[in-house]
Image (cartoon, rainbow, N blue to C red; front, side, top):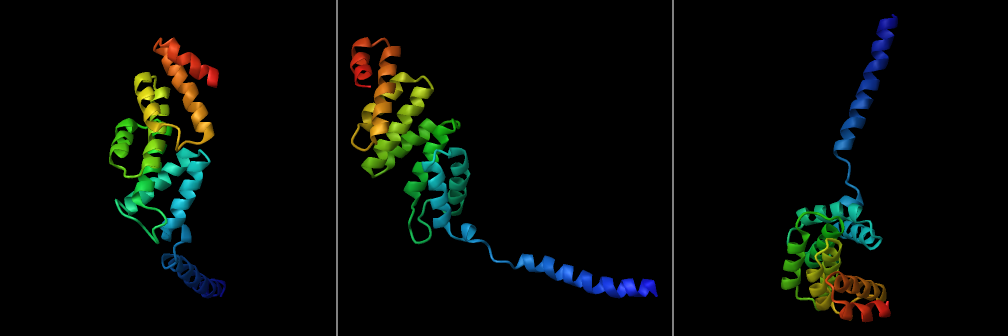
Length: 178
């Protein structure tokens, strides 16, 4: 009798467990995975907070899902995505980011964005001790499309580049400005 009672009790429990497990297969995906604009905004927020290691995988996911085209209601487009991905690659010291950044600068039809990429490429070149390239890209970036903090950082790094290249006459005025 005890065995029959256990069998009667176990059958409905197994059926319920099976139904619960199967219902997960038809569950709706969350908003984050189905809305590329939301995913982009999350990645962009992480980027702006300098959380490049967290932003980059999200950007990669978007790049794989929407290669070379706008997504959703076009709040972001591939130019924005490519910009953030390339800067993340430089900040994370990924292999060969300078070539990608240079290609972006050459092809983008957006002067402010090209200036910002030039600034980031200059900073990357500075951190890798390529002082001549850093000077080239700092000059290319200019100051018009940079924040005041970026301008100050650029002046210091540019002065440091000149100093390391033993061009003291060009370094001193920049050091005095900072």
